[in-house]
Length: 72
Image 1 (cartoon, one colour):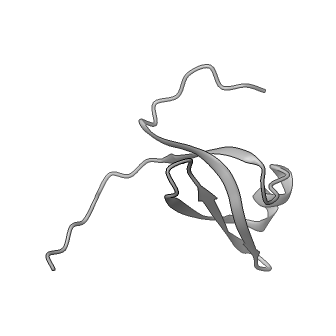
Image 2: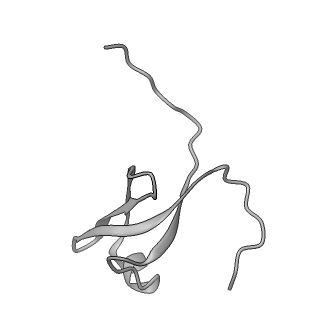
């Protein structure tokens, strides 16, 4: 299956940097070519079904209806 179109505008290409597997959910760190790390929490089942492994090229898709900002 290949994606020909998607409505998610925030897309980050990168490579899987680290996977911390848990019994139900896992953290997947994706590093972009610019060195930014995007972390996703997905089911461990999805990690296995997507055959994710360190070094694999992926696209992190970010869709949110809210972005919060705090002052420093």
